[in-house]
Amino acid sequence: MTAQFDRRLHAFRPDLADARLKGQVEAERFAEGEAACIAVPVAQLRPVPDLLRGIDTELLFGETVRVFDRCDGFAWVQADQDGYVGYLPEAMLSAAATATHWISAPRTFVYPQAELRKPVVEALSIGSRITVTGEAETRGTRYFTLPGGGAVIANHCRPVGEIADADYVAIAGRFLETPYLWGGRSGFGIDCSGLVQLSLMMAGKSAPRDSDMQAGFGASISREELRRGDLVFWKGHVAIMEDEETILHANGHTMTVSRENFDAAVERIGWLYERPTGYRRIA
Image 1: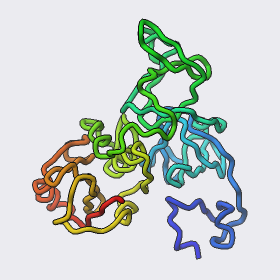
Image 2 (image 1 turned 180 degrees about the horizontal axis):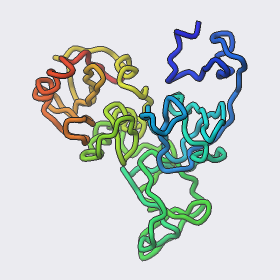
Image 3 (image 1 turned 120 degrees about the horizontal axis):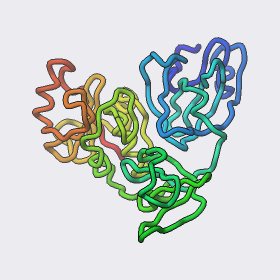
C-alpha cells in the first residue's frame, strides 16, 4: 500500500505519518502536524536526520512548513510551498508568522537598522518571506523595518504574491553566475531544477521541485517546436530555453548558472547523460 507514495512528497514512516494519509499507508500513529516557518536565511532539507548526509532541497526564510515530529534536535517537516518532506535542525524553525512581503532581488542584506553603513546582520535570498512592520528613510534610501528592529532595502521587496516580471525566463537570467549547488534553491547556490522552480515561483507559477517531477509538468512537445520558456530534459537534468538556440541552466560543467548554445550543450552532455529525454511547454 505504501509503495505507491513518494517519500519526497508524502510524510510517512512506520511509526508516524501525515493524518491525511490515514487509510492509505500503515503507521503506528498519525499526526496533523503543527505550523511553523523557517527562521534562518536558508534551511537545508535532508532525507534523514543526519547533517553528514547530502541535501534534497532548501527552504527559504519565512517559508512555512508542517512539523510532524521533533526528536534529538531535528524536525521532520513538509514544506507548504511544494510539499517536499525531510529533516532539518529544529533550531531553524520558529512559530508560524504571516509574511507581508517577499524578497524580489536575487540577494539582499538585513541591517540592524535603516542604515546601509551598519554591519550586516544576515543576507536573504530571492523568495524569502518577511513581515514588514514599518518604513524608514536614510539619506534618500527607503527601508522596510522588521520585527526586532532589522531593516531591508524596500526596493528589494514586493508584497507577497506580487509579480515583478511574468516572464520567468527573464527571472532565471538574473541568476547567471550564481554558483551551482546540488539541492540548492536560493540566490546563494542553486541546482538545475531549483532554478526552474524558483524562477517560476517568482513569476507567480507553481512547479514541482525535482527534475524527474518536472518532466511531467506542462505539455509534451517536439524538439522542432522549442521556443523561449520551454524546458529540455536529460536524465537527471533540466534546462530552460532562452530562445530557439540558447539554454539557461545551473550545471556541474561550469558550476554556475550559465547560458549555452543548445546544440553544443546536447553534444557536450551526451557522453555522460546521452540525448535529451523530453521537451515540455509550460502553459
